[in-house]
Image 1 (cartoon, rainbow, N blue to C red):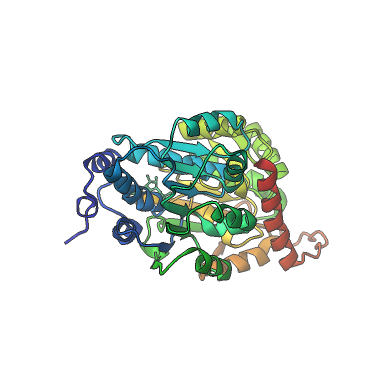
Image 2 (cartoon, rainbow, N blue to C red):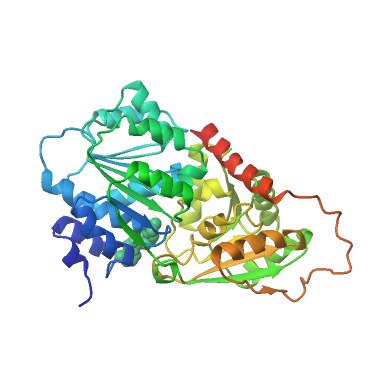
Length: 410
Ligand code: AMP
């Protein structure tokens, strides 16, 4: 018998919201985690964004809170997310799923005034979604207490560690009850995550969602080998000739994102950039314009793009391959979400081939390199003298850069 939402959840208000969202059946991560979370077990799940993992923890936690309905004692559920975008996304999901319940929720992230957040917390919230840095600001200020916390969720825990939030996590743990439920969601289970999980979780139920099995699996991957100085021309040609709308494009740096967006506008493709140097207001506006279709191409850095959830996003382009190979997985996970088809196009210059090799190792798959007629790399061209790239150093600098960017943005 197929597992249905009705067999997993009893709360009518939540079921109504799920139906309104158009979900017909629970995704594998939802099927496997909801019963354990309802039973108060610690859960450790390996699942990418796009698999439906937010509902996998939001729905059972909301059901439990609805059942309690006692005098408001403060925050009972805390969700920690590595970036503002993901925090906003998770908050929206909680709001959607909980729209027919009376559960109060608050959102706290850095880069914006703390005052409205304090007011929202003072008004009483049972669920708080926060980024680690701003949460600590609130704890230090005394604007919130976590003494009645029942459940803490670490969303995209691998990313949190990559971004250097280990100390923040340790400090947050000192402010919450030892007796609690802990849920950890991560795209990868590497050594750092396993170490953290020993510290955080007690006898966790472990779930591993096979990517092939997940909602994010239907992504076609195409690689075009092209000279660096012809990438933009090729990209504008592909977007124009294939009439792609809503294209998310990744660059490694903020400067590259700005420049590419400008140049694409000159090619007649409405594009804007999204990165950590923009104010929160500007980032929200760009995202809203992209989602509503006012902007056709969004050129983003990895940190800024984390957590972007656009239903039906059809195209992701790796204009520059990431120095951290795992980011490739996160990038292409922006498309092909929840069972929809998606296409990930990577433009690889000859000097980036070592990055492609690193990616192939991570995804355990060979990616066929193709030439787009008219844009073949010029093999007679003398390549610019190769700057010796220390591969390990490039990766570690990229990680550090993200880390620094996050701290500055807090
Ligand atoms: P997430 O992995 O939580 O970021 O979710 C990715 C996308 O899947 C979001 O757009 C959700 O609205 C959608 N989604 C979550 N659960 C389901 C489901 N059971 N059926 C269809 N779509 C879903």
